[in-house]
Image (cartoon, rainbow, N blue to C red; front, side):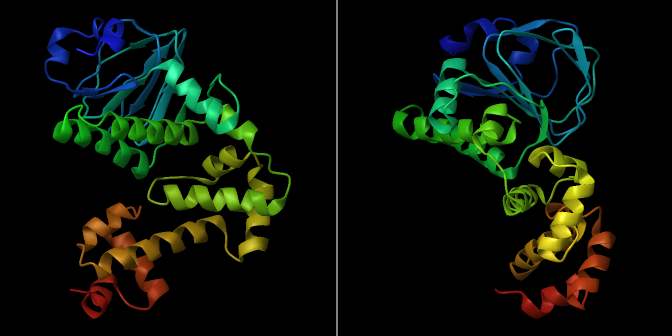
Length: 286
């Protein structure tokens, strides 16, 4: 048991804890649970993040009830009471705690402000964040705690990525966007990271703090494409890379954010002039 998180761990029912894969060091603890704690209020001393892989149950955070969706990062501030209102079937998901002193230190180094608050608590999380969490777990599995400097390095990368993806007001306040091209740059960066998620115009506009009407007109003038067309162009480009590596078409469709294989094939053919199956046969690099 990680002593740094003892108070939190003592609140988890034994039958859930026994089935949960856990990895930790002094800065953070990462869980891979297969169920939620139902009907019990849990006190969070530190920053808490949830990466659901299926629809989670409604969560009561302090006095307010929130409904979340899969694929979105749930960010909860320290010194908060949390409870699940009802049960819900779920696949294994990621839940993590980050020590508040460590997280605030990273925030101070990155953006000059120690206190971290979330303007939104429900944001899309990227594959990059998941990959960093995987690296943290793999490092502990393979090397135990023989390389504390490596673990510290991964901790810092995870914390920075959480600041970027969690809707932290610190990050927004640290970047002033007075010019149109800076708004466009932020929007493109957001779309490039989340192209394979179900992002909407509203999601992009919330991220860069613009009205949808102004953003769509400005983006079209700057790029010659609508935001929707631009996201699709990213998806097709990523699909080309995967097809050249020989990836199955159904897998490519899923990884690149298309609704299904048929949707992917129709759009790919319209853009590239040939269906993905033909493109794969023609350009597959052994």
